Each structure stands twice: as C-alpha cells, then as structure tokens.
Image 1: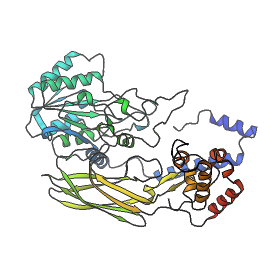
Image 2: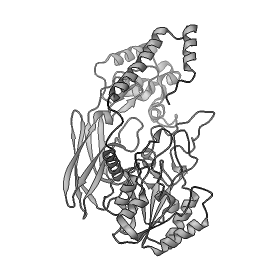
Image 3: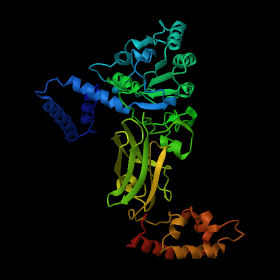
Amino acid sequence: MPAAEGTDEQLLDAVIEGTLSVEILDRIAERVRTLARRAHADNAGVGTTFDVDAHHALAQEAAAQSIVLLKNEHDLLPLNAGTSVAVIGEAALTPRFQGGGSSFVNTTRVDVPLEELRRLGGDAVRYAAGYSSDPATAGDDLLAEAVAAAREADVAVVFIAAPLESEGIDRENLELPADQVALVQGVLAANPHTIVVVAHGGAVQLSAIDGVPAILDSALSGQGGGRAIADILYGNVNPSGRLSETVPLRLEDTPAFGSFPGEHGHALYGEGLFVGYRWYDTRDITVAYPFGHGLSYTTFEYSGLTLDVTDEGIAATVTITNTGGRAGREVAQFYVAVPGSKVTRPVHELKGFASIALEAGQSEQVTVLLRRDDLAYWDTRGDTWTLESGDYVVSVGASSRDIRETATATVVGDVVHVELTMHSTIGELLANPFTKTAIETALSTAFGAADNPAVGGNVVQMISPSPLHSVVGLLGEAFDAAEFDGLLEAANASAAPAAR
C-alpha cells in the first residue's frame, strides 16, 4: 500500500552516509513527480461526475454473465411466475458482494436480492432471516421460522455466505459457517425444492449441502449482483458463468495441503506448476465441480473440431449448436496437451476460450488462435520461452472435465542449442551425433553388452540420467578426457542443433 511514514529520514540518512547517491534519488523523485502530474492532467476539468446509471447497468450485466449455475436437478430452475417462494437467509437482505482490503470498493448503490426477487415475484415471495451474523439476535427461533416458511412455499431459496475474505488473511479450512449449513439442511428437510445461492471469495466445500437439487454460485458479484441473481432465478437471464477455480471435495485434496502454512517463516510452494485444475486433473482427483464448469437452461453440442497450423500458432475451429429451446451463451474452452513432451507439464492446460451467444437451434463456427507463445514452456537452460516440436493434442469442451472434441496437430518448434559439458547427462550425450559413438564405445568397453547380467540391468537405462562427470570413474581407461573435450567442442560448434 502507498505510504511514506519515516522514509524521508531514512533516505536523508542514506544520502549522508553515502549508501544512496543524489543522482539515483533524483531519478526516483522525478518518476513520482511525473506520475503525479499525469494523474492531475488526466483529471483536470473532469470533476467527479459520471453516468451512475450506465455504470450500474454494466455492473449488472457483468454479474449476470459471471454467476455460475452449479447444479439444477430436475430443471428446478428457472422459477415460474406465480410460484410461491420462501426467500431465506440474512445474505438475501444484506448481501455479501465484495471482499475486504484492497478489493473493497465504494458503491453507488447495491441491488438487494430480496428486493429484486419481490420485484419479479411480487406477493408470492416471503422472507425469513434463518440466521444472524449478530450473536445478540442469533438463535433457534430464526431457524424454526425459516423451516416453517419453507414448508409453506412451493420453493425455498436459501442465501448463504462465507465469512469476509481479504488479502493477508489465510483461511484454515474451506467450510461454510455451521449455522448456515444447519439452516440449509433444515430447510431441505422441510421442502425438497430447495435452491441455495452461495456467496464467497475463495473456493468453499459444498459437500455438506450437496443434497439440495439446485445451487447458484454468485461468488462476489458486485453492486449489481442482486438484480443478476433474481433475473437468473426467474429465467430472465440464461446463466452462462463458468468456474474460475476448481471446487474440491476435501481440503486434503488441494495442492497446498501438506505444505501450508510453511515452516520457519517460509512459504513452501510444493505444487510447482500444478496449480488449480492442473493439480486435480493431472492426478485425476475426484472434485465437486471442475474448473470451467457452469450449467445453462439450454444445451449445446460441439462438432467438427479442425486444427490449422500457421506461423502464429494453431487455429482451432469448432461448430457449436444450441440444441435447446431457449437462447443462451456457451463458453467453449480449448485445452492443450503435449504427450511427448521432454519437460514436466500438466495433463492439459487451458490455452484459449470463446464466449458465444446463440439463439435456440442456431449453429456457429468458433475459431480460437492458440498462439505459439502460449504453447511454449519456460526453458531454464537458457532462461527463455521455448516451443517444443511434436504432436499437440487440442481438446475443446464445456469444462476441464467435460471434453467434447479432440484433434491433434504437429508443430515444428524452436531450434535450441543446448551446450554440452561434463555436467550433461549420458542420455543427452547419446542423443547428440558428435558424442554418441564415443559414449557408446566407452560404455561397451567398460561394461560389455548393454544387458550384461553381471551388471544386474541395462547399463544405458541405468546411467542415462546421470551427468557425465559422475560416471567418469566407472568408465576408467575407456574414457579419453582429451578426446572427449574435442568432441564436446565440435558438438557445441555445430551449426545444425536438433529441434526441440
């Protein structure tokens, strides 16, 4: 966060002590002054007025396109006009729509879900608090009132919310508040037509409420979220949001479990590349809801995936058809796998997506360019992005676990010159035409046949991962250091390194 408490004196002391030059300090100060002037110029004469209504309408639209329908058994949603609805939960009246800390934004207005539902449902909508965040007003009476309201209604809609989240505050678990879970279970027992709307900032464990037939994930939907929730529940908006993170079944399944919170003041990023869906999908861990998941009130069919390799990358084209009875929006997700990769990779990675609105019965082709840069990996040998040569398997679907079409394209990658040294592995030296024969001869002289029973296994397979310097002693007189230095020099000077 921007602050300057005490730094003036520290900077002055540093200049006096000679650890900070005046020239460097001047450059830093000039950058700050330039930014201040630019900010002032951008706002000069503008004032503080803007189109409040237009911005709020945009917030409503953004919320409507991002709220996720997780579950909808027996097509319980959308609600029909005239259906009696028991709206239950404090979060329906005082919604949880944003986070704390730097994610906290001053609103111009807030759409209240209960008010928006009454706007659409009229007198058929009644309310019961069910729980209270204020211990002074919480109690079993609220639960009993909610259960009674649910029993008398055609449908119950329960609003629950995870506790406030903010940066710098780590959660110890993924559980929903116990009183809200008890409320959902009590309402469900009274009315099997129960819908849950859950607000949260990070992933939460939903297994405790999995018995409900419909779940709407509003996440943190902003100041226009209340209108968006009501419009989706009543079918004025067809949901098209997709999960931006996997919903796990258990805390123990998450990538950071076992490494969190670290040790001796250090965070341990033990998952490496396997963050989020890359972890769950690579390890084939059963999850509650996968990355990219989201239901609609209509259905979509994918067909005819084709791949065209260009200088820019892979152009993936697929036809999507709205096979349902109402207009909707589909989010086609393109995942890429490199089964023959020489480096560690997840089983697949999202490399592109497209959001497309279709009328009932309409078909349309969607093309997404999977750029070469997006297909590359970070090569630590040269500290650069490198594109491997080989087959790239492109899959398109409605989530990371709902793959509809798959095709394969062969890509010619970057030509990478890897310098060979005494630290190179035997496998790398065997793969290079300049050093291959010398290594094979040395191994044969030292160990005999590759499958010599006296060695107890295939020599080449056993020592291929080992660096040359670690096996020189085993090779003995079969290894001529001077001769091999010349071979390494020739290999490194070669103008025709192999493509990776």
